[in-house]
Image (cartoon, rainbow, N blue to C red):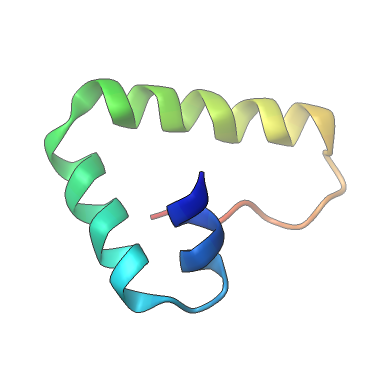
Length: 52
């Protein structure tokens, strides 16, 4: 989540790291999608989730 926060605030290096990680780790991608879905359930009117 730390990389996600950095990427959401414009850190392009963090964004690149996340993209690389999620592209090569199916379990990480699955977990990431679960986190995004949970956030949307908890705060359906909140800001859009950052998505790599």
